[in-house]
Amino acid sequence: MVDQPLTARGAATYQRILEVATQEFAEYGIAGARVERIVGAARTNKAQLYSYFGSKEGLFDAIFFGSLERIVNVVPIDAADLADWAVRLYDEYLRRPDLIRLATWARLERRPAGHLVGDPDRLDDQKLRAIAKAQAAGLVRQGDPFDVMAMVIAMSMAWSPVSNVYAATAQEPTELHEQRRTLLRESVRRAMTADHV
Image (cartoon, rainbow, N blue to C red):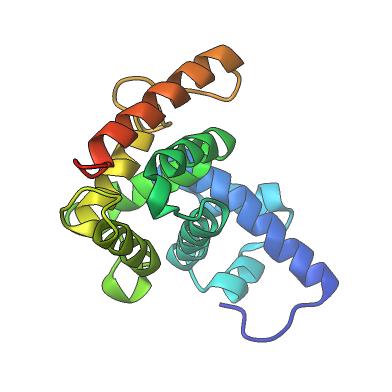
């Protein structure tokens, strides 16, 4: 990985590599991605790629962990309104289908069981604390906060690019997306609201 500051030209090359490689990994996975295609489309060379990222796996890691951070930052949790959070996740999958595909390749090729990322790299601590706090306030049904979070995320992915039933796209009619958002919002609200609320 890059330790020193990049020149403007180096930063532009670095960014081009990330953009091209994101699409390459999303389409072909880790094993199927080809460094030759990445450097060709990014208008650079293997030596430059390896000096920035160390290896193809290092490049995937940079992109994958960047995508996890993006989801956390762009779609922050609101544990008091998990239904709205689920809908915002649905919308992010429409905007950036490549991000959910990267996570799926990581699951298939790296961690077929257990947490998607190892404990040092997990970014769900704040989410779990927020859910536990909402549970303590009587807003969210009881249960392990991780399981509650996992269920909401799974519901938000019902029409995602990795759905085994139907993959939605941003090009579909707005009315169709609104129907799904309404169903998703109501389903999460019913499933996750504490019984007495």
